[in-house]
Image (cartoon, rainbow, N blue to C red; front, side, top):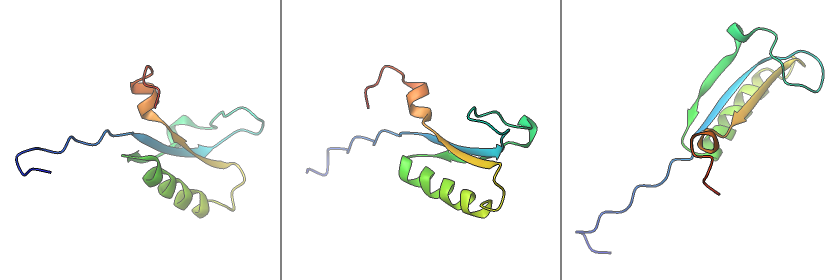
Length: 82
């Protein structure tokens, strides 16, 4: 590749990691929205999954604590097929 050509920037596939105590049942209903742990926003799924795994392992003794990875890029660009 020529030095004059700039590489196109990689597309960010943003992911949000969050968690909190949920009520019992199949539905995801947080007990206290004020206590939801917003872990962070990550540029790709691999980074988000690593953060999710770390937080989930730290709270393994609390059966009501659950963490999730939200695919923000799908919400921001719903027409994209990726």
